[in-house]
Image (cartoon, rainbow, N blue to C red):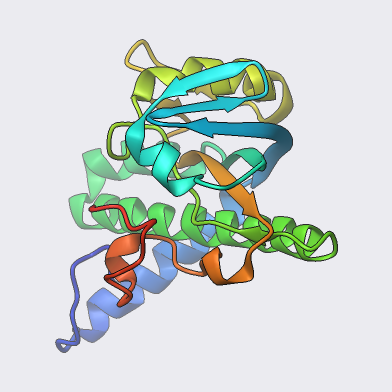
Length: 207
């Protein structure tokens, strides 16, 4: 509903039924897969070293400040959404829009589940999670997708590839870096800074 732009207004029964049917079809066809690996993390001004990868990004450096470990993550719900969007773009544009929204909600929900597993493992080691941070966000250049895909073996492990423009295929896929901190007060449960009311946080990134 949020991705479709609904903000509390009334919805016609026909539209609600279409959303339910389309979402159920997408869920049946989806094949969620993920891969994540943990690396040593070194943060300096405007630069992050993750394993052997060096990333030039002030926003990412701010997000990972104080972290000595970080997790590299990639996840997908598979090709069902792309197939459905292509199909309904010809026969039913309303359904195509619903698939776009449902696919976005589905991959977000799945990544949250994967992150919960990472959080539980980290907690057992006295570590806490920073918000996940993806290529293309702030000054974290999309070009780093190539390095992430190489490090995680995304095509081999979860069947996700990159376009020439470094976009992920299937389209309902996500890659991200999650910092691990020993300081619980610096951890975060928010997916994006824009959703958080703590405006004085030193790790806050403007969306």
